[in-house]
Image (cartoon, rainbow, N blue to C red; front, side, top):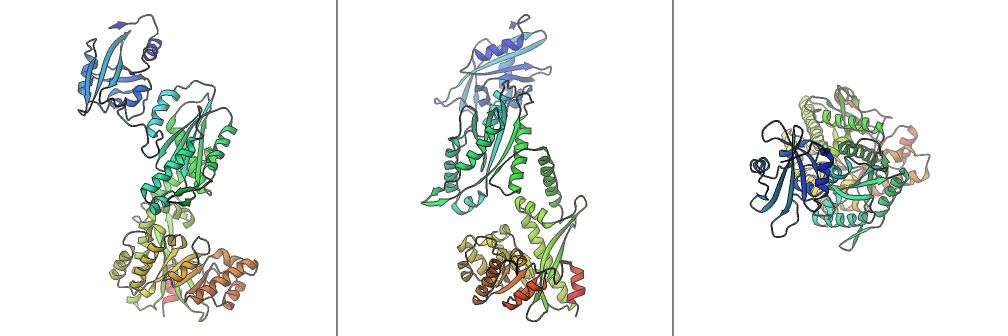
Length: 550
């Protein structure tokens, strides 16, 4: 055993690492417990031995979790002065040389792990390369940080630039995984063109990429952010068809004299990215402290939202729709409301996007549909006059396999006449014409009404309307608000009404608040109106008392 009473042990251990640049070197320190060691130093080659990022002082058993620890610890504690071997899954074999080093009362072990002897395979027990893109992966980022940046000493600052491809899931759904992976490969090739000695690129996760950047001035990061956005401006070719992709970018930074915590820096980049996605996407933002409060509130709100139905925090309000020909109200739209003990009354504009992104929208949407059918059953049994109720259907609900069958089961469960249920779908639900037509046909066979909500705000082609079995078009309130003020809006509204009438569809105008708007809509033969001019959304009991009791 080598004893070092004179030379500083840290310097000596660093020298051991420098003298073995082509092998993996791990420095362990023995703990008081038997067979217990901490990992004090590693070189870059050794980072390939563990799926866990190196942290100084971490438990050696955790670091060497891919090895048989009992066999490995025996080799460490009983060094022979010769090379010893340990097998991994009977497929690979490591050659290990152990050098004990004493310093005062401490015992260190320098492990020189020379190579993996298996068909000339590379020295690695875990993969640091993403299969799809060929880029370094998240595990490689952890290893690189532990190796080079945790004890980073340089006058340059460090930044993480986290890139999320906007709505990339739609490419997976429409093109299939193989072609979507091909697009990811093309995107990674474009991003790779921006790499240099200070900009290192990683495939972070799924449709996310990350640049690890060393820089002097903030302007350098702004330039790189703009270059990333610029790289996506040209279309991507898949099977001879052009596709366009955009991205959102979150940037977090630490100055050269600040501490090095990768997890904190990643969290800040994610919070900045979250802010970008909440504010229009397709641009970049630097992390600011107030972003963490918004992020925490959203995360906490999602946790409460998951239990909202269970804790009876959800309720339904109904907003009446007036028939312009008869001045009667015989239909309503169901609108969900959430009253939470912590957040109070949360507006739908705040919690619906959280429900959409988390997938909770399916559970919530199913609950609303079931409640509406339950009301219909109760009202029929009590002899109230029959009315139709419209229920909003999210894109995720609509695209669910067996969606029409689920509607059928709920209708049968509560013995509801289908003509008193209206399903409101959005224009975004109609992107895949063949799939949409099949779903709508199944719904119409049940006998329910189908309407298109917020018409005019999406991307659907007017030509789709004649193909689909749609009963009702709902004109978005943004068009109604500017009636008698904007000639273009008036022209659009008149065109929608005329087109729908020619196709045998009814039209409902949303957001009617003024008599002048009502007069315009009646003049141009709009079927119904909905808005505060007639009534706000009301609790179910108020609706019963005001509209249903004969």
